[in-house]
Length: 361
Image (cartoon, rainbow, N blue to C red):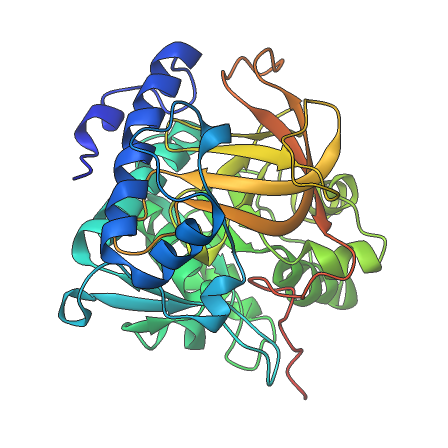
């Protein structure tokens, strides 16, 4: 049904709009038809809206489902015996979580897409990796939380991996020091979830007044902005403090969700999120859900070519955003570039680390 071969032959962020739009329209039509035939709940949603079209000529025509449906229903388009891995979103105690069912083909597509996307920023070599989290998050390899899935997914870019935090979320200074001595002067890959980096890494470095040199590092981080915004920590503040404390300059925020694992939007050097050959984004009005032009804020609809085992290819999120432009970003990348402003007012709280509850000590 869906082959990644055509897409992997193209540049992730520099493919012309015409070529990208034609490919995406074909793949998305195939996905929509496939899920309509193989997922009863998805079929019921589409039948309730307008039924199914044979072909969808653009992303704006594509039917979408609210992302929170994954909390209420087990949506999958493959038989249970084909499920290779089940992932769950994070949630506070008593809150429903999303369940995402992956077959081997979908898991493979997600990995290949993530590799192509991240390699365009860090290069093709695996780098010594510092993970700003605790090892306990990835111990269950068959059923992952969003944090565990994120760590495992990004771990493919690293070697000699070291966790910067202990299981109780305290900072492991000795492990970090040994890691930096071993890889002194070498490029490093650093990964973590935004809120955990700020609370358990940056805060602890401040308290302990410890100098750490990560100036050779490239950091990818995402998730958890809600709590940072509540603490008046902006993207600029986050980067400025990390640079002051560690010398880090190459810091890339990404936007993604467990419902579309592998299909991430990455922030460029000018502070804008970018779509790739594997995904796209629309902004819809919170009043009537009509598609808004660039420059207007609304609710984000995220589109991915990867979900083959479940109908997660076109999702209405609970996040507010604004498309800045469809081309012309100063960084030179083509396609849609946009801003994410956080959760919509009154939206149900959920996220990779927004919902992380600080370990009681």
